[in-house]
Image (spheres, rainbow, N blue to C red):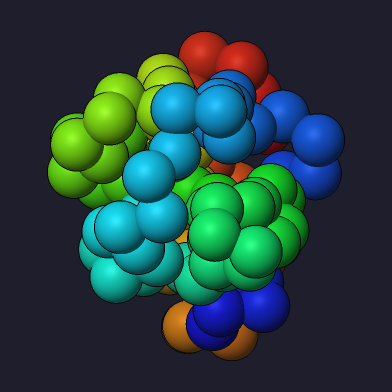
Length: 97
């Protein structure tokens, strides 16, 4: 499931690498392995893997990460359920994804 991308190029995730202290908290709490540590800083390995749960932003001690949490995981519920159930289920948000 970590390689599942439900919507491309729409994620609100932002990382200010200058603020990053390389604690690795974002790597530890991200359920989709969006972040990686390299050369003393966190980097976004694959922005499209982000489901906008907000765990990274809530746990970043330097507030180097911002994301409009709730948008992606709320929209993706039907899509993710469809992935596991073997059918094509769309989201039920007002965007009509």
